[in-house]
Image (tube, rainbow over all chains, first blue to last red; front, side, top):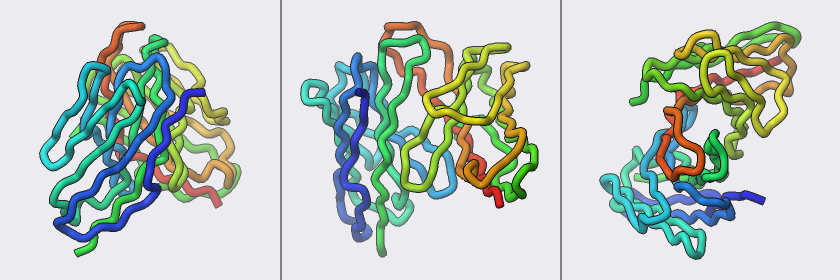
Length: 114
Length: 118
């Protein structure tokens, strides 16, 4: 069964600190993995997208890694800011259909305190 | 910011009412999607469309219906709303990709409609 599991479920950190969010998936055949940021009451916004051959990708203070062998990904946030408070969702796309089905994790709810 | 719009942003209605959630995109994307999301839970695909006059049901069974008469417009309708329909509804769009080809085909999401049925 294709699944995406994220940990931790929630995380509280102080402003300026770093943090790492984890994503494990069983989706096969694999096409790509995306990290989205979703602010409360808003739609998800893409942070990074990685294909099978990409091990790491950065977007400003966000750095995502992918280990396609172990089917794990992480999202590292450096020097956190109050505006980083949001839900971070790991999404894996399969390669087996024209639709390109997306499998969503439940997200990690990050709260950054001043 | 993606050019995909949803209205209304918030809707509170009584049981039994007919409602239509609007979704429009100006990117010329062929594919459009409707997702349902409850608090703290993952997004579930309820409808999708490959293009004009093409609509399919998604993974999660839904009593809603959709139509795709124009490329840019993908409205969702509930004929008789019930409290169990209370949720956030997210619309998304993407370019058409090739089956079996690893490509981004990124989905762009609208801001969502928060529906509450009393």
